[in-house]
Length: 186
Image (cartoon, rainbow, N blue to C red; front, side):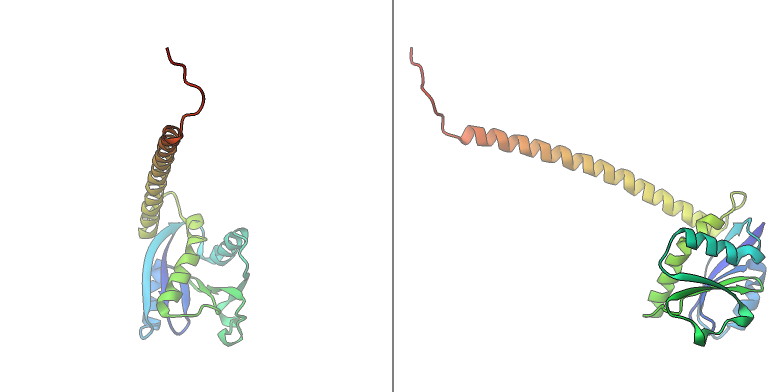
């Protein structure tokens, strides 16, 4: 079982890194002048040498519009990257996901990369051990489930209210209409 960290790096070799936790410190030292954020950790049964191919398979199944290219770190040149492709770069201790077409502010880029990680992270999670990302993911799923239940309750209440209001409007319309026909007097 592998223990990974998910890091977002803004500059230098930017992108989203999925690295064995034991190697995170060496990357942080190497990027000491580059702004970065450790998003969290997780456990996986996918070995680091298979990580790039596994993520690529997961993303291809998601049938996203971008072409996904898996390359080795030594053969990748960012200056020649195609803006319409997504790169999964094999690193010594994991992978770097690079979206050369990601534009906007650093905050926007970070959100884009974090959203992208949601497309593959759950499929990498181990059932045996949990890291901070697995715990946060479970909490997020619970929140969505609770919100969905509440939304269904509100929808039922609204439908009931609409029916009651419709019934009242029908009764009011009937009472408002002038009476027609002959009246029989005794």
